[in-house]
Image (cartoon, rainbow, N blue to C red; front, side, top):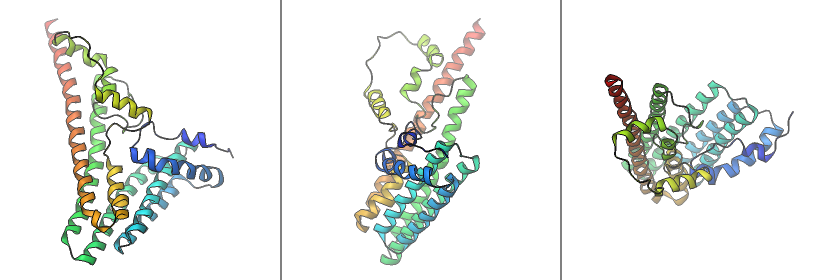
Length: 288
């Protein structure tokens, strides 16, 4: 059996990931993945199931008002969830069923932990706000993870229609409209440039410089995603104490919604850009 090195494990990390994963999870997950790969026969699916079991334990701890224990176990659950992907990429043992299991397991873990958190605090205080907190967390998570694949489908449909290459293997690495994407799409830019007066080239925008700086550190350009939302609600807030649950979850939820609105708006700009380009090309064909 092949012996893997830590560098081999590092090579399985996603090209771009959430900042929470990059800075607070991957350093641990990579070192856990190394002995798992070299000394065990655990499959990615077995690790996914283990991660889900830990998620259930976290939900039980939160339901019993053991906030610190619930936060620690939730972190371990998410960390193991990252390990399974690294093992799958390292050994080439990933399967389509494994993708489904990982996706569904994540949703089940969040719903159970949201329910456990709400139940534990409501039975302790009788405050209905905690019931709303649990329901809100579950709904926001489901919205985020229903919306994301739909936006990916839109991008793929546009690329297929325009016969554009896929620019990144990680569907979360590029936003629907990333400045780096526009640089690589001269066919999409050309019709718009023909319609607008020529202008002197502008210096790089702050966003583009920031995006490239983050890319060098493997961090996604959208800094508030579902992963940071989960970390805020189920790790940071419980570790801070019961007083932080509602304000931290509410703040994280608002930031997540703002992020989703921005992503949808930028996706609309992305599709509109191609609609304008297609309309211009159609008029040119008619005139010819």
